[in-house]
Length: 237
Image 1: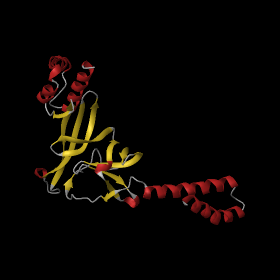
Image 2: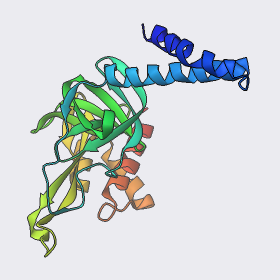
Image 3: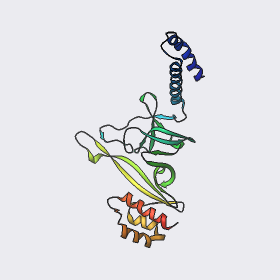
Image 4: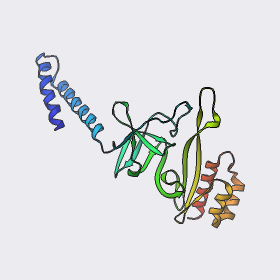
């Protein structure tokens, strides 16, 4: 039906242009084709299976910063939603509510249904939906390493009222909690001791690796965690 509408439009407008004698047939064809594609893209935007959810409403005011992952501007990403992979899609990840937001028509933002999301890739990171990782239950986790073990980051942003200023009532601060999945169970690993306890079957090897390579668990914990976990993967193959 939508193709028929575009063709009817071309018959209504383009014969008049053709009769004036200054547009070749190829140009008329290109214009007609562009009209058809524009109509199809507009209809696809409004009827795509991706666009199910609720309208996004900002619920923070006079707060410094924003609740989103990396940036408060839309980034191109991909998302596996309700059994379909959507690529090159405008996405935001709201860390304060653990929601994925996409761009709808006329500048509106839409909060996607979390239960329909299997995973999404955004800003060079892969986020997966997992159950029973933490006491918070089901949610999205940044998949940092996948192999015999999984390393996950639970990223959140909260308003810290102690950062109040004359201009702001508070500021968003980001918190990261880390987990390792081993043997089908998830373990919190937010310091070096917890990490070594979880990977205790290779503790001697890991101690030697840490002594030699000196990963900085204090200032760059995430990098140190990944370096150590990757080495564990290497020696347990």
